Length: 248
Picture 1 (cartoon, one colour):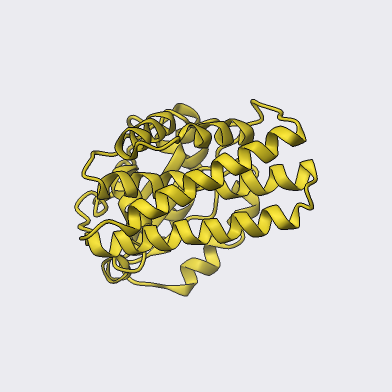
Picture 2 (cartoon, one colour):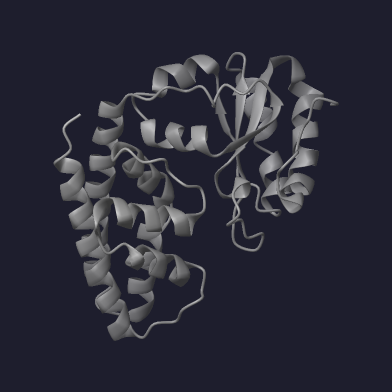
């Protein structure tokens, strides 16, 4: 237990996670390679009222008894906005870098190892795989945005929900695109969007607007939502064209 290190983490995150980490180590320390906090809980944008706390548990070898042990803890720690940890092994990680380069790139840039060895920092991602997933993610978002718009029937609440759903989880994708464009990706969301705009010359302010919508900081009327959707769709489409044009 003395090897747990929450140095540098938000105090609220550390206080919420400590009991869970201790529970895991009490029962399964011999098979736990490392425990990493990832995502918004590691960055300045963390909002304890809105942000989930995400983590990765790396096991020396996959053991379904650990998964069975973890399952009932969801009710106990879910109330604290602690999401179910991703459970992996070092072998799984190394064999999955080609399939999920965007996600592992974000883990590499944004994580805090609170127990065990930091194997995320040294991950090496193939740029061709990264470009392919970025293309796929953008095109998936475009399809989803169109379907969400159609399904909303032009009504305010469904359209707002579709926009929020589409922008959720986009920061990892945007950081990956910044890397493909030869820039160092920042961590704070506002800086990510600013850097993406500067790197592409596109109107990326719309992404910030949608993050504000998600956080409940703006309450646009229905006609304003339609205008936001058009700006958002065009920004996604233009970003996709830039990715398509990359030769790696």
